[in-house]
Image (cartoon, rainbow, N blue to C red; front, side):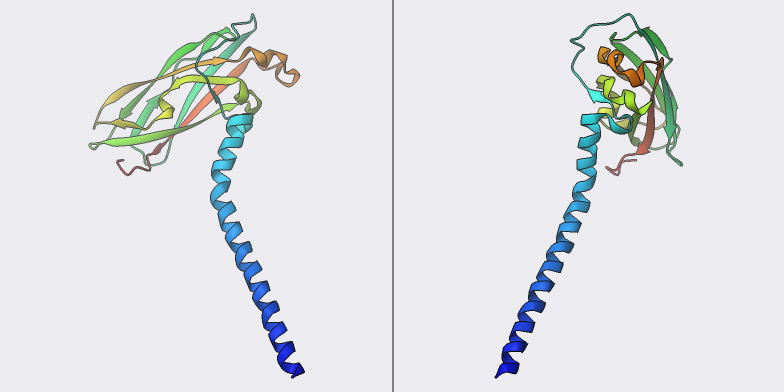
Amino acid sequence: MRASITHTSSNSSNLRVALILVGLVAGMIGMAYAAVPLYQIFCQITGYGGTTQVATSNPKGTIARQMTTRFDATISAGLPLTVRPAAHVTDPIGNAHTVTYIATNTSDRELTTTASFNVTPDLAGVYFNKIECFCFTEQTLAPGETVEMPVTFFIDPDIDGKAELDTVREITLSYTFYPSESGRS
């Protein structure tokens, strides 16, 4: 009789360990799926990795310190698109600007793209605010079509109070263009 009690206790222990392991695996899978959106939220809040901010306007005004903003574009390999970045802008910090990228679909089929972006130096990302941007939505271009893609932005005057950014006189806004995941490209 003692052997059957030990056997039942052992089965109960094994079942408990198995349930814990299954729960652990399920939790790890859940965390893997949550990692990307959580990381994106973290980057948007902190500006980590050069992630820019979204704003509706600049309520803080301008300051005398000048800043140059440069623009560049990278196109994913094999994407039949050419992009001419906007010309650089030098102005007092806080001024809102609208600049335009020019994109051309070089293929004979409709092309839908999306663009990811970042700012360098990375620490400046939290101070770079976009009011409007083509990167907020997918862009669909007809075969051979050329379009203007505007970006309206300003640099938050609070950048002037950060000692680690005192020597920064130039910020670069970079876009990387990819085929859209919607399947239309």
